[in-house]
Length: 261
Image (cartoon, one colour):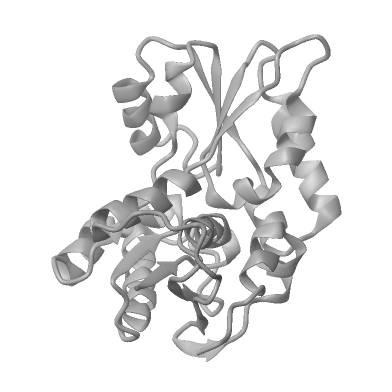
């Protein structure tokens, strides 16, 4: 079994690690776009063009499923990618986990990129899934970029700035950008208040990985040997994981028992 994941940068690491944990035997193809990143500031048409090129590079390696490991790319490019690749290649998008977060009942904050915060897409998800729960949208200026470059000082500054915009009574936070899942514990530490129950964070990686397996009709097999290979594509060229990926546990996991192929 071979599963491909795509993003402009290392935001796909969280979903990739989730797939690796569920199916250590799966061959993985990671298709990144260093020549075109970041995708966030691009127009929807331009972003879709970049996403299609990255997806086609991954598809050339004949995966059984393709995960879009990026919220922004899912918003703009999912319909085009499904029209291009399905039904032969199932395409799984990444959507902020607003519905399960709201199910907890407490005030919710959605940490997202400034471009996504307040967007019709995110507002539509809130209207459809928040079910009356109070939701605060928090723009996280510079956080995705800081995570992409593993810039510790900038990560700290961006997390602190977003935390200052988050109401004190929030009990649940939706991580609305895949990059944020790589620094989830730093976000938790910045928001946790003394004497209050542990803050609940909701990312998308585990759900996306599980959905990919469901689309393939296979079950998790976490007890099997970690023998799946790892192929990295950089704007279509075979290469290696960006050095910044190894700053995160999710990136280091992929270098364990993952022969290049």
